[in-house]
Amino acid sequence: MTDRHPTRSPSGSRPSPHPEPSASLHPRYDDGLGDRLALSATARRGVHTRTDGIPTQLAERARHGGFGVDRIPLESLAGWSFAPHTGNLAHHSGRFFSVEGMRADVEDDALHSWQQPIIRQPEVGILGLLAKELDGVLHFLMQAKMEPGNPGLVQLSPTVQATRSNYTKVHRGAGVPYIEYFTGPQAAHRRVIADVLQSEQGSWFFHKSNRNIVVETHAEVPLHGGFLWLTLGQLNELLHHDNVINMDSRSVLACLPFDDGDTVALHADTALLSWITEQRSRHRVHSELMPLASISGWTRDKWSITHREDRYFQVVGVSVQAGNREVPQWSQPLLAPVGTGVAAFLIRRFDGVVHVLARAGAEGGLLGTVELGPTVQCTPGNYAHLPPEQQPLFLDTVLSAATADIRYEAVLSEEGGRFLHACSRYLIIEGDTETAPAIPPEGFAWVSAGQLTFLARHSHYLNVQARSLLACIRASALAKNARSA
Image 1 (cartoon, helix red, strand yellow):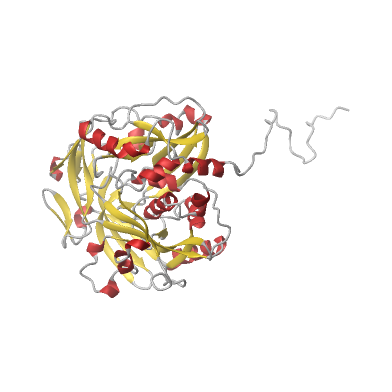
Image 2 (cartoon, helix red, strand yellow; image 1 turned 90 degrees about the vertical axis):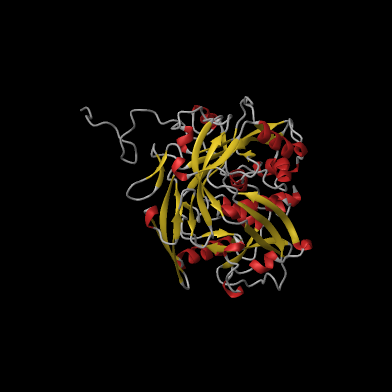
């Protein structure tokens, strides 16, 4: 008698009509990658470029590139308009970004409430860095990129720095060079070194994230004008110059998976993660968008939207000429901070291991409640009218630091595509038992340099200022992996 039922596997499941493709296991970690990154960090010369001439080359490119940025009235922004009912400032395509209002309530031990203009850009942009081994050393493809808000106009950006609107050509302009290594068919022939969503400024953006991605290719890469291959050692050297390495480059560089080097820290990783979770739990952050025309404490005139006490920032309009961009001419709003900011880590060495004093900061525009930021992150002028006890903790320590205690200092700008001359003094300052106590105030924690690297591999643990400072720590050879490289 013939069995009319198909045979079954021992588990009782029916056999697949198609043969299962062979599966192979792969190592979870690349043991050699850390050594390759460390080797690149020691290489002070690249195969094509001498580092010492790059700042001059950027300045020459800015002078002779046909670039121009002029302030114009907000009503004169071509393609932009204020919505009649909300007053929101938006592009006619509905893409790129808009300037809207936000109300925020942040509660920990006290309730802080305010309203402000904020940039809403719901698209996830790509900050992509292409890597290739040249003469046995990892090099990274950087772009000498003009952004209208950059001091000096031209700085070194990642290979790709583009919003989705840019690389899908909503502007009807030219394509974004090298985007195919990150999104197109060419992306299948790459090796991913880092890939993580990270936040941008929570004080100026509403729930903004970018994809920070580093990929390595073994294919031949055509070199377009304005691009150059640099080692990590060269990039580290350039980080000591004011306004040469832009914010997006610093953010992506911070996400590189260096070997931690340090196997011990004041707090175990699990304890540190628990502390961050506790901080997120005890901060109640409620923020929501509201009509720009309805926010209190701000006024709008022909040229700007300004705080009534001339603090924080303004919203201004610019007309831009840039012959080598996807679109050669455009206009747009920019957020212009009032005053130069400070972003500083106090550091101490505990049994020889470098730790930074990180602050769990709640910002109204962050996607989550809290991310770790620098010890001090503020614009001092916004607090100058307040008594010392109401100013940010450790601000006086940072501003009065002796030259001998400063391990790193440079003026670095923030995102030049959205902010006009938004600069901060980035500082790493050696503390002691008096200025940086081992048992810090509530909301602060000592985090080793290796733990910063660990956290930067994951989304929304380090804010953009902390990531910039992590790149600066490596450039200053303070982290153990940098010292031993």
